Image 1 (cartoon, each protein chain N blue to C red):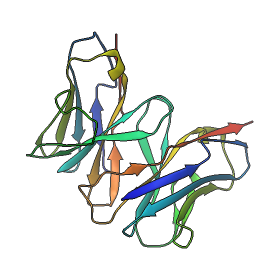
Image 2: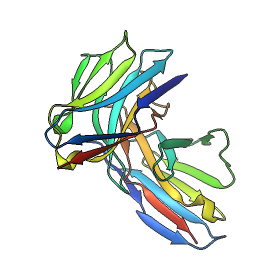
Image 3: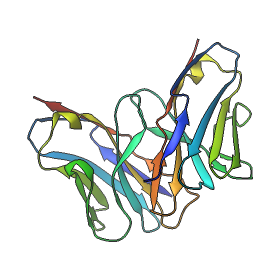
Length: 115
Length: 115
């Protein structure tokens, strides 16, 4: 079984400040991990994914995440927040070679960016 | 990149009527599609896994007779909400896995309101 836990349902940062969104996973097999962003009434857009290659993954819009097996974590960071980063962020897990297996999502973290 | 087209974006229907939601993979073949439901300010909950040419696999607690899924081709899956009631009002999102890139692509979602 696989699961993800996102710590903090709401995170508020100032524009230009560091963004840190936390995600911890549980998986009985080597995980594939994903971060998605969702804007109101829209689908999910992939920010980045970890699929057992480099542990530091760089994504779109300046986001990156580091896979830490010892901590079972996959936290999302961005050095400098922009107003347009305000959205809902979801961490998700799946297994390798599982084309028929759906993603399991965390509960989401709403990011607010203050001017 | 992989694109999943979902229609309609929003729909309002009367109680007791049925609504069909379509998801199409535009530039790849999706033998498996996933249907999620999202309540306001909540995460995505998997409803069912749609397999081309066979019966869908429903998650526990999801009424298969109410949420009919058809995956008749490698590029089209449909979700029909039968005899809709106000409690079925929600945001429905489909997803497909593009095996070319280890990614899951999401449709833009359908906002269903039952009045």
